[in-house]
Length: 109
Picture 1 (cartoon, rainbow, N blue to C red):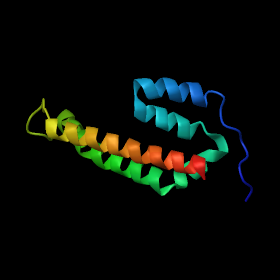
Picture 2: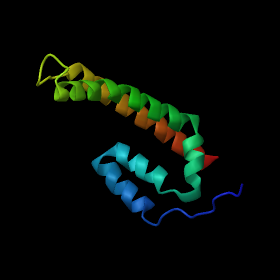
Picture 3: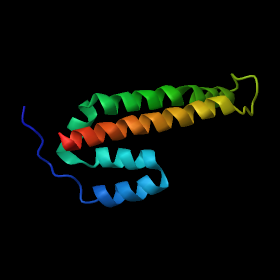
């Protein structure tokens, strides 16, 4: 199998900075997805994988309640899952920090 030698997109830096100022998780995602052949290195990093897994683990309960309320399976049609929102926020911050550590470690090695 040959290695992908595609160069990073010229939009990687400006798009990552703009999205990083507006929504930091999207800035990290843009940096990783627009990185060309470096993308595989980022996605193989255990730090980036752990960050993504923690982010998903925090998001699934909140979105589960939202979907269950939407289709009528939740007892309250207008739920206010504040605790699950805080869980989502904490998992998002922790997941982004871990992914950022993974990106930095990949860049320095």
